[in-house]
Image (cartoon, rainbow, N blue to C red):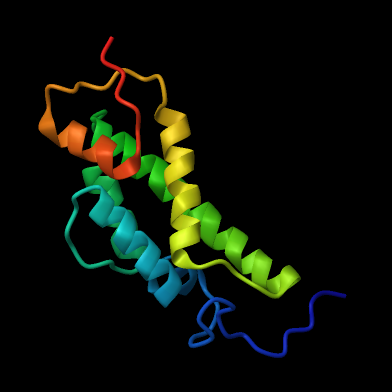
Length: 139
């Protein structure tokens, strides 16, 4: 009973053994995706390991500002989309490009924040909305 595994290499990059640490932040696919998400949020830093990213998120994502909301949503979408792409490769034999997956993440974040009040007097919020395609509701 169980799965017979011939190869334990990552289904997205084929370079390293499958692990939580590798899948979500060390894999070149995941690292590129999360790095782009950070850049879209105006966060310019190197992508770390699972533990490093979790420590960063735990420390930095405590407030209720727009950027924190976007990063929390994007984190959840990132993890879900990586899992989904691994399943697409495992069961369908193909994955989508990082750019296509990022469009899905941006859409999920946009839809979740649509209609929410956004303080447009803060230029950081305006820039964030522009990067993510979030409609700005001011009333």
